[in-house]
Length: 89
Image 1: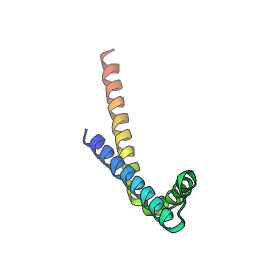
Image 2 (image 1 turned 90 degrees about the vertical axis):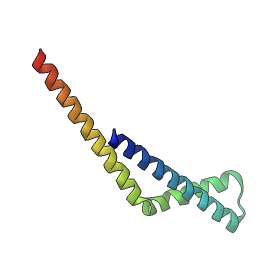
Image 3 (image 1 turned 135 degrees about the horizontal axis):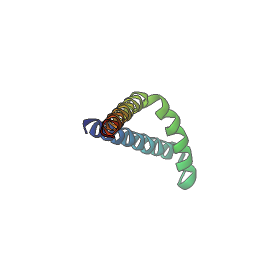
């Protein structure tokens, strides 16, 4: 259960940082260019996506590591359950 809580917390942090980065980039583009509407959103999405590849790498790697640990734990639990079921058969 601790892995699930950690994974959820890391996902929320990463998603929040992505949203904050997008909003910050959108605000900066709006101030600089005075673009509005859909062109502003598209340009902000493009720039923030590229920036997040570099700026949010540590958070993304921590999230992936937590998800891998959780998947390994679930696979081990599944194998243990199968072993117990095979013993009773």
